[in-house]
Amino acid sequence: MKTYNKKVVKIKHHGRTIYGVSYMPENTKKCPVVIFCHGFNGTNKDFAMHSEYLALNGIASFCFDFCGGSVNSNSDLSTTEMSLFTEKEDLCAVIEYIKQWDLIDSHHIFLFGGSQGRAVVALVAEEYKEDIKGILLLFPAFCIPDNWNEVFPTLDSIPDTHEVWGVPLGRVYFETIHGFDIFNHIGKFDKDILIFHGDQDEIVPLMYGEKAAKIYPNAEIEIFQGEGHGFSEPGNRRVIMMTHEFVKSNS
Image: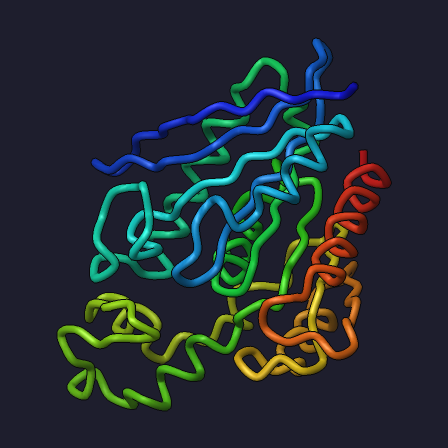
């Protein structure tokens, strides 16, 4: 019977601590790793099922809580201190940490981002092109700057705090994306990219996933019929299987 090793890992950077969980196959040879980045108000647990499956099939995973990324986060910072760019710092710190692991094949590091986490993955991948072998994007929230620049069109209109879906956000979240066009900062990553997007997504319209697929030189988009922002169990199982195949074909 196949088994895997699960361990809590804490990473310190920029005066704060990231809480994460590693899922390692039970073997002694170096293996590929997928770093999972959750979406808005998510946690490391969002990709536990994905990570368990990969670990049982010879691929390591690391899931973590973005600092201030959720009201349920085990990492440092409050949600009012979080922004896309503090999350970018978090992911960079995770990559640098994992690159040093003895049982990780540092030439086969993959990034998987969901929703807001996907936007963070895209920004980081541009700077880590030499380190990242491929990326997977689940309903990529490239709409975030567009949405909030419409709500708060001027810097003066941004409040000190604003609640979104029960999550209090600080001025820094909106101020740092004011006038920011994410598509001007991505698209140079030239390795394989696989995008998963539902055709019924009312939070992140399919057009953003389709635009991302066109802007990258080696990106493919898999459109999930009838799926919204947050896939059904069959949809998630399909994502897991396709993630496994993507890593294997690029390793």
